[in-house]
Image 1 (cartoon, rainbow, N blue to C red):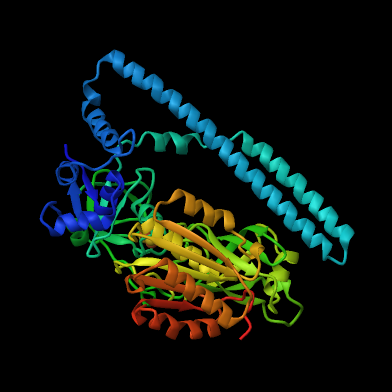
Image 2: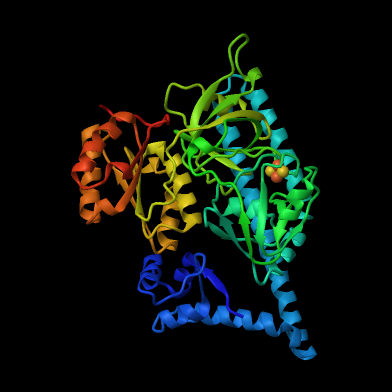
Length: 506
Ligand code: FES
C-alpha cells in the first residue's frame, strides 16, 4: 500500500519547503499525480532528507504497516494493543475533560470581569450587583451539571480514526483531510475552503456535489430530493455525507468576494471578554442551520437588539472585521474598540449579556487572501486592524500554502498588542512564522518610515511578497508609493481601513 500525499503534507513530513518539492517535480525527479506524490517516490527523490529525531516517516510507514497487518495479529498481540488503546483512550478522555472544564472556568472568570466593569459604570449599582450575583450562582450550578458530562462519544470516535480519507476537490484541485467524525462540509470548512453551502442540514441543496471517485456514507437525514439522473451521476450533499475512502469531488467554491452572497442572520452572543480598557473581544454563535459564509478578512454590520436603544431611536449598528477564520463557522470573533465615538462598544459592555440576540448583515469587502499566489506573506496591522489580519493569518495557516509569514503589529502602546500571547505562540510554534511588535508615536509619517525600514532590513526581495495592511486610510495612502518604490508590486498590495481603532495623526 502506497500512501498519496499532497505537496504540503509531503513537505511537512520530510521537513523541506513546498518549493523544494515543486523543484524536484519540475526537474522530473519526482512524479506527481493530480497534485499528489507517493511516499515511495518521495523517499527516492529525497534519499538524504533529515527526518526528525524519531523520524516522522518511519512513524507513517509503521502506521500503514500496522493498518495492513492489524487483521493478522495474533490474539495475544491484539489483546496488548487493545489494552494499550483502551488506556490511551481513557487518558485522552481525562485530558479532554480537564481541558473543557478549564475553558469553562476561563469563560466564567471573563464573564465575571466583564460584569464587574459594567457595575462600575452602572447608575443603579445595587441592582447591577444583585444581577451579577444571580448570574454567578446560575453559572456555578451549570458548571456542576457539566462536570457530570464527559465528551466520551466524541473522543472515542476521534481516537478510533487511524487512516483519515484524503479529499480532492475539482475543478479547484484543492485538497483536505476528512475526519471521519465530520461531514465533508465540516472538514472542508475546517480546512479553510470556501465551498458553497446554505442550510447545513440537508434541505437547500446548495452543497450538492458530484462524487467522481471513492466512497461516501450518508450520516444524517436529508430532505433535499435528487433527480434520478443526479443520483445516477453520483451527486451527494456534503452536509450530510462523510468520506469513508479517499475521494474526488466536483464542487462549487467561492474564489472571490463576489461569489459570496449577502446574508442576514440572527445570532447569539457567546462570550464578551474585556481585554483591557480599550478593547472588548466578542464571540457570537450563528445558528447551526444558518452559518455565515464569508472569506477571511471580510467585515460585517452588527446590529444590537432594538430594546437596547432609547425609544424611537434606530438599533445601534457598527461595522467590524471578522477576526476569526472561516474554518470555524460556528464561532465568529470581533475586536470591539472602546476608544472611539461609536456607542456600540459601551452599550455592549453595559447592557448585552451571553445568549442575547445580535443581528449580522454581510459579508462586505475584498480584503481577502489571494490563494493562488505563490508568494510569501507579510501582514501589517495598526491597533485593532489586527482583527482582519488575524482572520487572514489563521486562514493562511489552514491552507498551508505560504513558505513564510511575517506579522508586524504596530500600536502606540505595548498593551495595545492585546493578543500578544497568541502572536508569540504562532512565532514559537511555527518554523515559517515571524512576529514583530512595533510601538511608536501615532503619526502617519513616523509609522510609515518605521515600517519601510523594517521591511527593507528584514526582507531582501519585496517583489516576492504579498502584503496585507490593515491601517487607517491616510496611512495606507502614504504607504502605497513608498512600497512601490521599495519593489512591492502594485497587484501584491492589499489594504483595509474599515475598523474603528486608535487613530493616527495625519
Ligand atoms: S447546505 Fe443545504 S443541503 Fe447542504
